[in-house]
Amino acid sequence: MADVKIEVRANGPCRVTGPIDIVDQDGNAYTIPEGQWVSICRCGASENKPFCDSAHRSIGFDAPSEAH
Image (cartoon, rainbow, N blue to C red; front, side, top):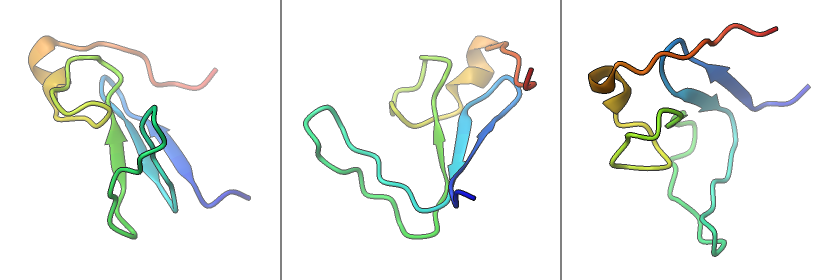
């Protein structure tokens, strides 16, 4: 079983936990402290993309998070 978990949060970001590497389009790695979880923006309004800055709260982002 994978050590990485991606949680789709209600009306918010995707929270990623576990040992992960995140790189940009040129292959440059983002610095993520070991053991730290990250939240990836899915509303598109974050000023800190690809990471969430809680902008979803101020724009009223509404998206389902239930698995089907």
